[in-house]
Amino acid sequence: MRLTVLGCSGSVPGPDSPASGYLVQAGSASVTLDMGNGTLGALQRVLDPFDLDGVVLSHLHPDHCADVSGLIVYRRYHPSPPHRAALPLHGPYDTVERIRAAYATDVDDRIATDLSDVFDFRPLHERFSLGELEITAVRVDHPCEAYGLRVRHDGRTLVYTGDTGPCDQLDALAAGADVLLAEASWLHEGDRPPGIHLSGREAGETAARAGVGRLLLTHVPPWTDRQRVLAEAKGAFDGSVELVTAGAVYDV
Ligand SMILES: [Zn+2]
Ligand SMILES: [Zn+2]
Image 1 (spheres, rainbow, N blue to C red):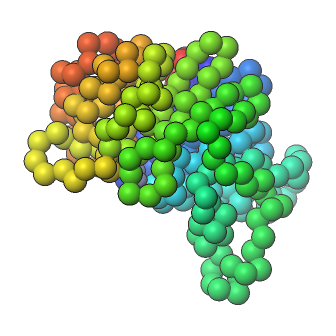
Image 2: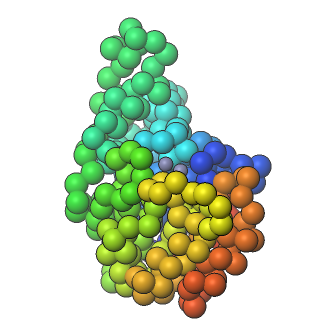
């Protein structure tokens, strides 16, 4: 399984990276986990957006889904599309309304906008497949309907936290994963409201409790010190830890 970081800047795009988006490829399947601001451009460096087999949205904050609007334009208005097949789009309960509201310009447009020519909307079931990828989605601890995702192929496992505070569901989802791609939005010091994000230390503690093989840190916002986040995580997890960057590729 190959993981390409399309964007890894937390909460907003940063000077060196789009917001959250990850391309996962295995066998003949190419699937994005999230499509935050700027990720559609980064995706085109790797493959034609018509070659995607699915999009999975962990939740509906803009930094995880804003570029789905661009994907609609790309697939609907391309002058010579290679095919017209609707793209499977898995997301939380309100995904259709959310994407429609982001895409349409006003009430009339929203009523008229039917996205079924572009997307095959599917709610996020606990287990589903996209091509050869087996995916498990579990509710995690964030202020909206949000999921952590476990992706399996050929005996290898990647777990993506999405956005979440520390929680038992995340520990269970990540248990024994070969790679944990964990958000680390905050430094551990100071006042941090519960149930929103992980600190670097909490990402490391989650990796340690889950016994993962490797920890990749992501979703660090532009206003947070990346090296201190990394140091926190290394202090809590003995295994391999690194901060991902836009464009980085990993074999899982
Ligand atoms: Zn986020
Ligand atoms: Zn969020």
